[in-house]
Length: 269
View 1: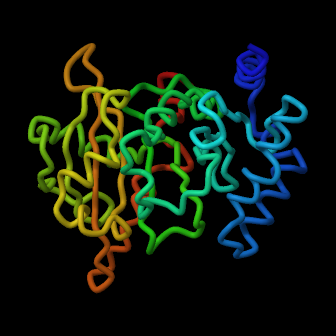
View 2: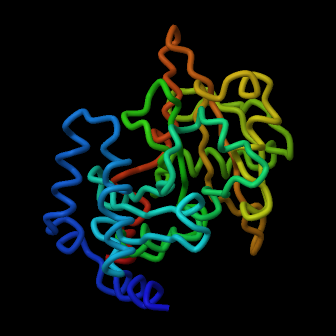
């Protein structure tokens, strides 16, 4: 209950003067910028979880959820890049999309947890973001800078949102190549009605032969979409790294860390 009260208080007062001014956030940013590939893990393991357990305070994270125990818990951390970007990070050591732990039968559905915490992005944007303005992404092992699993939470790029809306009728329940590239990279796509029912990691590994053989070179993106009025769901997007063609499978590129979709329209100004 105390955690829920703290989260509500945070969402009520959030602003970048608050998020950007704390020394703990600056320390985290400096650590990540140092080239330490375990910076995120150290932040979670050495700071956020102990602080929550000892002081009922998640700092420097904005949330620590240990309801399933440390082995199945996660934190939400404001990323140092962008105005609205947050990260969901497990509280157990997991390298990234390449980890076989993610495909275990009882593994936590971190994507569902990330989507449930999307209010942090909306609050930081100071704008009521529609379902189809938000997205989640994990980069391939080749293009990530940290060796602790982290799911990026942010707004989607306006052109990505528009492309998905234009081709929504061509996206089905099995993986198929999108007829257009997204941000210069080819993607396979499928739709999903409910993140809470099926885990995107497992859908990728079971539905794409290349991913089943080696998940490390895959990037995975979850975008909120509206299939019909009042019918919200998700499109899963996957791309495999091909360095020879300049594709490093960096799905984070589909997210917009400036959150242009939150900018007021001329009518709103």
